[in-house]
Length: 442
Ligand code: HAM
Image (cartoon, rainbow, N blue to C red; front, side, top):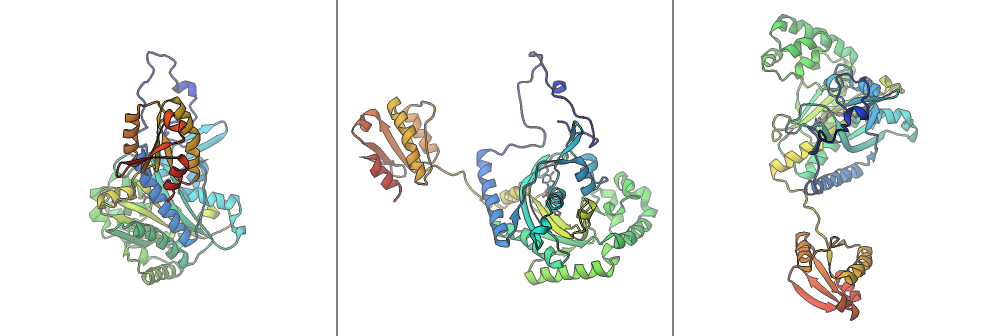
């Protein structure tokens, strides 16, 4: 698979990649640029975070949804917007036969697709869903920005009420609160609806027109089709120009304005602090009304921990019945960076309860059979699987943090005994396996 400039590029056959010439064959494999292995020490932290997120989801009563990693390219292009960076530059897309596939760059369009495909509204009420999983964007990798990254996110589908916006923001904030993340800023804005935006777009163009030649190239390219994205520019030459641009909040119609006021008052009631950022525009085209981003000064350049907003028109755009919805997604990697910066210790790899140390083949066979009994009691147990010496096995038990070792040789087994060792104080006694099991479970 390749990263292709056009989402609809032709597929490349295996034969075109595979080099049958053994002299030229590649011998040093590594992950692709921007794709990262999560090694055991790190995986323990991921498990901790994932389980905390699941706990928050449970306490908010959000149900999990898992969608495929490959989606139809057309769904993503239509859902996120053909002019966005994600769709125009960052998709991992390929085709196979008649079908166009894309590695999903985010979770909202897939969730909206699943909602329509399975008529989830028939389950009744709003659909309060969450997800955790890998997403793919062919961006230029740097700290906090990868090509395969992971998001956790939540969506409420089927409510136009500002209560749903507040619930989504509360869910997101609760995750960071439980982890103990500090120094965050929640930025809040309303990006209006198409009616409010039409008036605002004209006002923005009128404002930027006299400065057009002074704007960065990228902002000049956005002037005609999507002048709101100029507000998102990080280019130095654009900063002083955009500082005095008109604000969307002055162009909201009554419906959008009332909605925004209610979201703010719900957040105030929840004690969730935010700053109003009238220039906050998101990098995906589906947003209407509420838009928000959670940033952290501990992240450096890529400072967004998470973001989201309302997307009342997306489901209809994708062929479903008009259904208002709101959601957020946060980056797992960025959360881990912040924890590291703040010195928040998440989790160490788990140590093993019992290590069976064996001497000789008879003991190995005995251990293989009886380790099951230990595991059935709910304890974790491991043994040497590579024929190491007893000394090396004891070292391994130490390295794995074993609490107990059960040391067996053929002679002891003939007498119906094992050596039971408490690793913390190196005490050892010769007892029956049944007595050892009883000790393990006290
Ligand atoms: P997003 O702002 O594109 O929104 O992504 C959400 C979060 O994912 C970002 O704030 C960031 O933490 C993380 N993220 C994005 N790209 C990368 C990357 N290349 N490497 C590492 N982390 C990254 C969405 O995806 C929307 N679907 C959010 C949403 C849900 N809106 C409504 N519902």
